[in-house]
Length: 113
Image: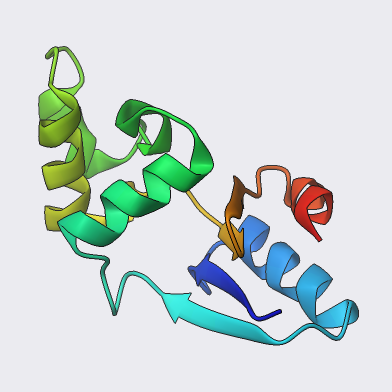
Protein backbone atom coordinates (compact mmCIF):
# COMPACT_ATOMS: atom_id res chain seq x y z
CA UNK A 1 0.00 0.00 0.00
CA UNK A 2 1.37 3.39 -1.00
CA UNK A 3 2.04 5.81 1.82
CA UNK A 4 2.03 9.59 1.66
CA UNK A 5 4.16 11.95 3.71
CA UNK A 6 3.61 15.68 3.94
CA UNK A 7 7.24 16.65 4.20
CA UNK A 8 9.40 19.70 4.81
CA UNK A 9 13.02 18.91 3.93
CA UNK A 10 14.24 21.72 6.20
CA UNK A 11 12.64 20.09 9.27
CA UNK A 12 14.73 17.52 11.13
CA UNK A 13 11.65 15.64 12.42
CA UNK A 14 10.30 15.42 8.89
CA UNK A 15 13.63 14.14 7.57
CA UNK A 16 13.75 11.55 10.36
CA UNK A 17 10.22 10.37 9.52
CA UNK A 18 11.04 10.03 5.83
CA UNK A 19 14.20 8.08 6.67
CA UNK A 20 12.14 5.73 8.88
CA UNK A 21 9.74 5.08 6.00
CA UNK A 22 12.58 4.46 3.56
CA UNK A 23 14.24 2.04 6.01
CA UNK A 24 11.03 -0.01 5.83
CA UNK A 25 11.33 -0.17 2.00
CA UNK A 26 7.86 1.31 1.63
CA UNK A 27 6.37 2.89 -1.47
CA UNK A 28 6.20 6.52 -0.34
CA UNK A 29 4.80 9.55 -2.13
CA UNK A 30 6.53 12.66 -0.80
CA UNK A 31 4.52 15.89 -0.85
CA UNK A 32 6.61 18.95 -0.10
CA UNK A 33 3.63 20.88 1.18
CA UNK A 34 5.45 24.23 1.26
CA UNK A 35 5.87 23.98 -2.54
CA UNK A 36 2.63 22.10 -3.23
CA UNK A 37 0.24 23.38 -0.56
CA UNK A 38 -2.89 21.34 0.14
CA UNK A 39 -6.25 22.84 -0.80
CA UNK A 40 -8.97 23.59 1.74
CA UNK A 41 -10.72 20.35 0.70
CA UNK A 42 -7.51 18.30 1.09
CA UNK A 43 -6.84 19.81 4.53
CA UNK A 44 -10.40 19.06 5.69
CA UNK A 45 -10.01 15.44 4.56
CA UNK A 46 -6.60 15.17 6.21
CA UNK A 47 -7.90 16.59 9.51
CA UNK A 48 -10.79 14.14 9.40
CA UNK A 49 -8.47 11.15 8.83
CA UNK A 50 -6.18 12.39 11.62
CA UNK A 51 -9.22 12.60 13.91
CA UNK A 52 -8.20 16.01 15.28
CA UNK A 53 -9.45 19.58 15.34
CA UNK A 54 -7.87 22.07 12.89
CA UNK A 55 -6.21 24.00 15.75
CA UNK A 56 -4.28 20.82 16.63
CA UNK A 57 -2.62 20.88 13.20
CA UNK A 58 -1.42 24.48 13.60
CA UNK A 59 2.21 25.25 14.40
CA UNK A 60 1.32 28.03 16.83
CA UNK A 61 4.88 29.26 17.39
CA UNK A 62 5.38 30.21 13.73
CA UNK A 63 5.74 33.90 12.89
CA UNK A 64 2.74 33.71 10.52
CA UNK A 65 0.48 32.68 13.42
CA UNK A 66 1.45 35.45 15.84
CA UNK A 67 -1.25 37.92 14.68
CA UNK A 68 -3.91 35.24 15.36
CA UNK A 69 -2.48 33.80 18.58
CA UNK A 70 -4.91 35.55 20.93
CA UNK A 71 -7.96 35.22 18.68
CA UNK A 72 -10.64 32.57 18.96
CA UNK A 73 -11.00 31.32 15.38
CA UNK A 74 -13.46 28.86 13.87
CA UNK A 75 -12.33 25.54 12.40
CA UNK A 76 -12.91 26.98 8.93
CA UNK A 77 -10.73 30.01 9.75
CA UNK A 78 -7.89 27.78 11.00
CA UNK A 79 -8.08 25.75 7.79
CA UNK A 80 -8.05 28.95 5.70
CA UNK A 81 -4.95 30.12 7.58
CA UNK A 82 -3.16 26.84 6.79
CA UNK A 83 -4.10 27.15 3.12
CA UNK A 84 -2.79 30.73 3.04
CA UNK A 85 0.30 29.96 5.16
CA UNK A 86 1.25 26.28 4.67
CA UNK A 87 4.21 26.80 7.04
CA UNK A 88 1.59 26.65 9.81
CA UNK A 89 0.83 22.98 9.08
CA UNK A 90 2.35 20.64 11.64
CA UNK A 91 4.76 18.13 10.15
CA UNK A 92 5.44 15.48 9.18
CA UNK A 93 2.08 13.91 8.42
CA UNK A 94 2.08 10.32 7.25
CA UNK A 95 -0.96 8.70 5.62
CA UNK A 96 -1.55 5.02 4.99
CA UNK A 97 -4.97 4.19 3.59
CA UNK A 98 -7.59 5.44 6.04
CA UNK A 99 -5.03 6.10 8.80
CA UNK A 100 -2.87 9.16 9.34
CA UNK A 101 -0.59 10.43 12.06
CA UNK A 102 1.48 13.50 12.84
CA UNK A 103 5.01 12.16 13.30
CA UNK A 104 6.10 14.14 16.32
CA UNK A 105 8.16 12.37 17.45
CA UNK A 106 8.89 10.56 14.16
CA UNK A 107 8.72 7.12 15.82
CA UNK A 108 4.93 7.59 16.10
CA UNK A 109 4.61 6.83 12.39
CA UNK A 110 5.58 3.22 13.09
CA UNK A 111 2.12 2.88 14.72
CA UNK A 112 0.37 3.00 11.34
CA UNK A 113 2.79 0.81 9.38
